[in-house]
Length: 267
Image (cartoon, rainbow, N blue to C red; front, side, top):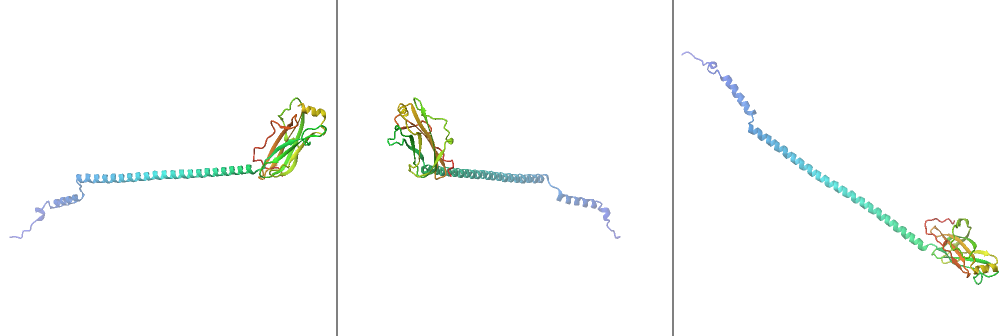
């Protein structure tokens, strides 16, 4: 009975390869992923990505919606501000226009109005008389509510020997006629007047020609004055002597100014 030692190298010739195979299998269990699990993982990632994209798109749509709402509100605000500004300017212009109309109406109502109220011969009978001067006194009156200032009156006269008196005079240049200052004329005053003398002594021949409607005398002129609002006004006049001794108004050259914007030049 000899001591017989077992020879492990001879009886376990495959122990090395088997150990290596077990280690490989052990390693593969940690790395290997079955096909089904791999598909589930991809599908899960895909769903997460799609969900993320859906949420992002929804967020973008909401953001776009509120951006549009904000833009609309901004446009509405700007439109309202523009309309409000336009309305304010319109109301301001309307108020200014109304104020100007009221001012103009007040000035028209209160201003001086100078006009001819009477014209006559200065004889006692107020008719042409043989051997006496033949003249015409033109009487003015301020029919306004305030004084007429810096009043000045011009006058010119003439005669026409014809079978009729042309009651329309043309080509009159008032700037070439001298003006006589008459000062201020109070309201309802008949102070200012001017006189035109046609002849110093009326002859029998001229008197008969007048009565036969063959000799005609006429007088015309202009009155300029200012109102208390600093505006200048004017009145023109024209009259001719009739056969009966009275004076008639010419068809033209009896006018008044229509404006209120001419500044006073009387000073």
